[in-house]
Length: 593
Ligand code: SF4
Image (tube, rainbow, N blue to C red):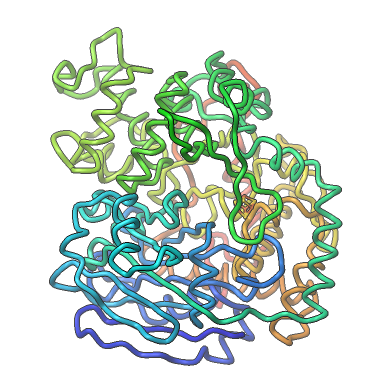
């Protein structure tokens, strides 16, 4: 079943259903790829992200809802209020599958409503409903209440929390209560449109045929050979703290130190020792990397690695109970824990170094109690979501906060305005080059560079293990190829972990061909990914990005003296020139046509 495009204008209340353009389908594979084509055609590079003309686009790819593993993903795109360029986020769970079952691959929301509303999509029946009673509510209560109002517990909901309503620049969108379309402030764009939520229920069936089943069988066989899949099935993403701290791929104290013993208290081992963890999965995933654990007598979602890193090791918080609580709090408020943690890290360093004239005692900090100070940090999280006091400035993210307060350049750690995730760029030159060049800014979710020196080979396009401190063309070559392939994979709609687990691309391409009836070779499929990548790059250049934006902050040009990343400085300028050449771009990083 190829879905349709649903267009909703919240200003005029117009609702339209369109077919997907065949040329877009052939050129950009599906979901997020086609969404990028529509976005770059229709959203002016000069508009403000909170302008009603900005489009908020939800999409699912051809894999979605089929037997192909990892196919429950959906993607969200808009011009980002944080970066002012193309913004993207993706999320797992069940919302995407439900959207597909309702018959839609793409939902485009334009305009602004005067009053809070939510969308109710029930197969082809689409309504814009009043959300006055939901406005101000957290994401958990919002979902519960929508299901109750509509009288169906099987409805799937994507919703913003108070942070999105208050236009916090890194507000996210939460679906199925604990899955986040986290990055680039997509929740703030939703809030600017006064759109509280999208509720969906569908009854359609996905494509099922011999080819799909064959490809699925092959993928499942390869999964059994994947060490990473086995580890992730056992312990989920928190295992990164146990396994990668020794190579320095963990954020510590706002990227200022190379070692911290507290890491051991907040990783997967500590979590498993704390009590039973019940596995759970997104739609159609046998790995089930996610977990529930008991907290205050209830089964709640386990924090993922990025949250443990950004709010834990980044702020030197080694209290697992606090991190479990904050994970629930941040989800309910609807904020990206990566940008939030980075912004908090920047603020803690600012007050620790007395770089700002601010009374820290009213926040609960004292000179000796800044890093790891649980109560004040929790208070700040609330203040940011509601933009109260210093929370107002912090709600704009690291780049704006540093600029407004004229803080030293090394504190302003971001790529194109997006805060750096919990993977240290000095620990792996592939990560560094990737952060500097992705179209979304410093992002790690589509391109798994931080593990590319250990696994994630792609045999058909000759991606082999590249030593993590290599300074040669092998780094630029691997980064380019993985970026292009993962762009194609994401357009098909898979969870990126599936892409990491397999060392082959052929089964994904076979699945894509079987679902769509097309006859792509691996080479052409990856080239389609490259087209999507270049299309986003060109849009960002129109927004004002230049060669100077291909970076991630001056701190990373000074080496750490301890830990697994010590003494390494990625030679970014040199790597960029190699990378531009391989991409066929000019020396300023501009695609030639
Ligand atoms: S690997 Fe984890 S995040 Fe990905 S689909 Fe499976 S359960 Fe969801």
